[in-house]
Amino acid sequence: MNNFIYARASSVQDAIARTAEDPTATVIAGGTNLVDRLKVFLEEPSQLIDISRLQMQQIERLPDGGLQIGALVTNTALADHADIRRDYPLLARAILRGASQQIRNMATVGGNIMQRTRCPYYYDTAFACNKRQPGVGCPAIDGVNRLHAILGASDQCVAVHPSDMCVALAALDAIVEVAGTQGQRQIPFVDFHRLPGDTPQRDTNLELGELITRIILPPVAYARSGVYLKLRDRASYAFALVSAAAALNVSGEEIRTARLALGGVAHKPWRATIAEQFLIGQPATSSVFEKAANLALQEAVPLSGNQYKVDLARRLIRRAFAVSANSGGMA
Ligand code: SF4
Image (cartoon, rainbow, N blue to C red; front, side):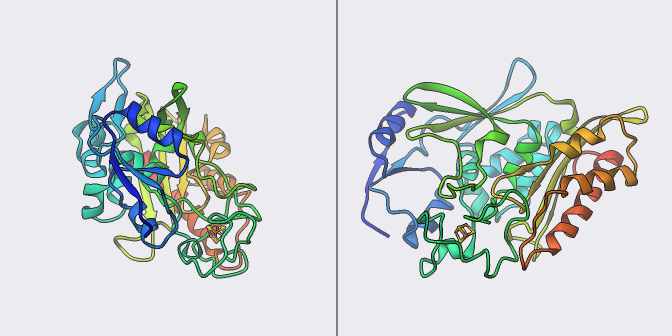
C-alpha cells in the first residue's frame, strides 16, 4: 500500500471538487473492495476522499411509487428494508446471495456498483493484465478461464463483473443518478457499466469527478414476481458462476412483460433483451422458457475452460422464469 493523504469530504460538492482536480484521488465509503485493491498495489491513489459520513443513507418513496436509494445505504440496510422486500424481492435476494454478513454490513450501494472484477490475473501483479495496464496482454484468454466471460468479451479482456446486486438492478430498469462539476445526470443502469472493447481499463461510464448519489427504482408491475437465482462453487461467500434475475408479468394466458439479466457471464450485468422481446405474448410454458434461454445465449462465445457456463446459464434461465411464473417473489 502506498502513502496517501486521507481527507474526509464535508459535502457532495466537496468530494466532487477534490476528485475533479486530482485524477489520482479516489473516494472511499465502505472500502470492502477498494482496500483489497490498495493492499496489492492495484490502486495507488494520492488521496483517499472519505465520503462515508455524507447524508446519502436514506431509502425513500418517490411520488410515482418508485423508491430512491442513497448511495451510502449499506447492502444490509437495503436487503432488510420492508419496502424492498415487498416490492423488489429479487433485489433483496440478490444482495443476500452476495459476500458475507460482515461485508454486507460495511458495503454500500454505490461501492457495490463500483466494485471491480475478481479476475485472479488482475489481482496478481506478477501477470500482465490489460485492465491494469492497457496493451500488455490478457493471460486469461489462453490461460485458466473457467470463471470468465461467455458474452460480450473482447480480445483485450474476458473478465466478468462480480456483483449480484447489479444484476438485479439491471433487470429492474434502475437508474443511477450521479453528480459532477457539470451538475447532475441520470444514467440507465444497463448503460452504466461498459463492455471491455479496446478500453478494458474502464469499467463504467462515470466521468472524472462524478459521484454516484442515488439509485432510482421505478414502480414496475413485474418487480414483485421477480426472482434471483445464483449458482456458485460453494454455498456461501462465493461469486456467481452464473446468476439470473428474472421477472414476468403474466395476464391470462399471455406474458405481458419479461425481464432477464445475467451475472457471471460478462464484463457487465448482461440484460437479455432479445429473449425478453420474444417472451411478450407467449404462454408461460417450459418450452417457451427454453426458447427464451436459447435466444439469451445465442451469441455466447465460450473460452477453453468455461463451455459449461453456456449450459448452466440455459438451465438457470429456464428455472428462473418457471419460478417467477409459478410463485413469484422470494424463490
Ligand atoms: Fe486482466 Fe481482463 Fe485479462 Fe483478467 S480478463 S487478465 S482483468 S485483461
